Image (cartoon, rainbow, N blue to C red; front, top):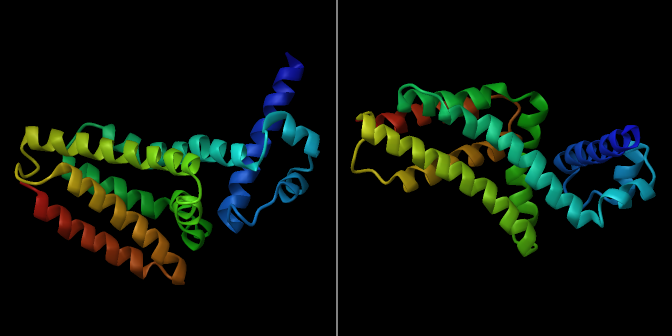
Length: 200
């Protein structure tokens, strides 16, 4: 049992440190050697848990990135209350929660999409699943809003969901260019205006 715990700890260490390095330096430029140097583990330890860098990359996407999006952007959508308020709070509170490091480096999921989203089918499909889950959660909430009478009946929930995701990911990327949060404040003001347009 102790050996199993040690093995799992090693695996999680590689996963966690790889995520940090991919986020900071990019996936393509981060080598297995760099990961091992950072973790102070041997290459043998790496290849015991992962066949290659591709398998590690897929693990980072499906475990670390998916968890971030679920906790930050999907789970908050599932709470009870006014749908418009939930939407505004989820997007604005998420932006407010980011550290300076997160603001400087943008959205890790979006970074992966831009860097390797068209690089290989396996990466594309795994990243797409994250976006699909997020979009589906938004559609579900918007449809609930229509039922409850807080969202206009004639709007396309799928279109609104895609727009909200795209605008959020866009401003996360644009923020990397600035030294202040003015662009985020303007985004949140625009979000509020947009949500008033779909409010019943």
